[in-house]
Image (cartoon, rainbow, N blue to C red; front, side):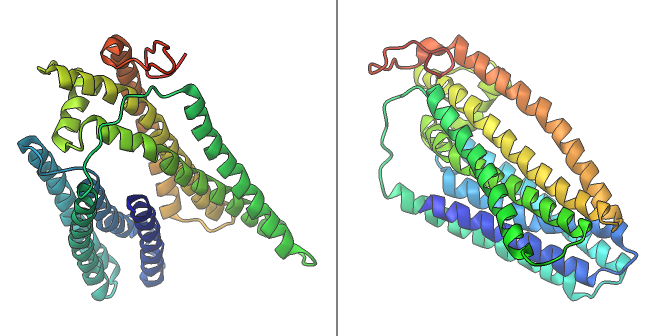
Length: 341
C-alpha cells in the first residue's frame, strides 16, 4: 500500500509541476522570461515541500522520542519557511509581470491545501502500518549480486524506454516526411523519456534498501538523525550496544542507498537538461532555459562531492565496525561493508 501511495504521490507531483508550469507560461507576458524562475521556484516549493513532509510522516515515527519530535519540527519549520518565501516570490512575480491576481492566490492556496493533505495522509499511512507489529528480521548481508541486479534493472529500463520511444516514432513517421529538426525533436524526446524512466527505476529498486534502513533504527526519526551524526559527520556521541549495532547497520545500508539517490538525481537532471537544451537548439532562445541548465549543472557539481564524502564515510564506518554486525550462518562469509565477498 505504501509503495503504491509513494508512486502515486510522485506521479501527482509531476503532473502538478507540468500543469503549474503550463499555467505560468500561458499567463506570462512575452518579455518576462527572466522572471519565470521566481514563479517556477514557488511552484516547486508548494508541491515538493508538502511531498517531503508527507514522506517523513508516513515513513517515520515522528512522535516516538523527544529527539524525533524536535527533528520533525526542524523539517516542518524549513518547509513552512520555504513556502513563505515561495508566497513572496509568486506575489512579486505577479506584481512585476502584471499577471492576474488569481495566479498567486491559486498557488498559495494550493500550497496550504497540499501541506495539510500531506500531513493527514502521511499520518494515516503510518497508523495503518503500525497496526501491524514491527518484526525484527535477522541481519542478512547485502550481496553484490543483489546490487548488480538493481543496477541491471535501471539499465534495462533506460534501454527499453529509449527503444520503445524510437519504435513509436518510426511507426508514426511511416509514410510521412519529417524535417531534420522534427527528427531531432523526436530523438530528444526519446532520450528524455529514457532518462526519466531510469530515474524512477532508481527510486523503486532502492525501496527495499530504504525499508531495511528504517528497520535498522526501529522507525525512529530521532535515532536516524543520531546515526547520521555518528556515521556521516563523525560526531563522537555516546552509544549503547544496541545503538552501536544500529549504527553499523545504518552505515552499511546508507552506503548502498546514497549511490541510487545520486543516480536518481543525475538521471533526472540530465533529462531536464536535455529538455531545455532541445528548446535552445530548435531556435527558441529562452533566458529561463539557459538559467535552468546552468542551475542543473551547478547542482550536480555540488551533489557529487557531497554524496561522495558521505558514501566514503559510511563505508569506512562499516568497515571499522564490521565486527558488530551479526554473522550470516547461511553464507558464513565475513563481510567488511555489507557485501558478500
